Length: 196
Image (cartoon, rainbow, N blue to C red; front, top):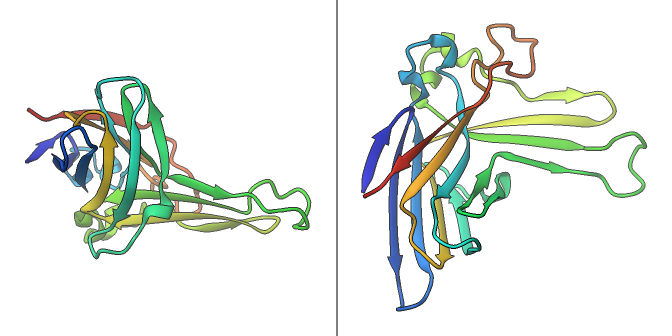
């Protein structure tokens, strides 16, 4: 069943294949950041996606697959997150080099991934504020992956079906119109979408 709230659209379905077994969940997420009345907020990305208000304090999540609108597997670009009544996915992944790499390089690369509103992609003034992949000194690189929705999160979870989704919108304002700026200065925003 699809629902729309705040700056995103979400479709959530869950099915228990066998009695007492896990629930197979399919969660599709679209960014609607372009609907924000302030043009400075329109190019934001959904950077965290959680099932929230789950029953119980521990959950088992398996058979995870995250795909973009073209069916390309993006699973490795997201990291598991949550705890307590939540299970979900965060945008940031990184790689720390093994011994033998240049000294003083704590992180070789960091990758930021999020769900982007395609209408911003079609608006040059909005899209120009995207944060850009850039190289840091000492063999480091920071990567930004803007995925056009829907991004589909498919997995099995126990012990209960989800009833709500919490989304975190980040990188709000992007570079603020200053291409050389590498990080957003506006705080994240979050909202919860409830399902009956």
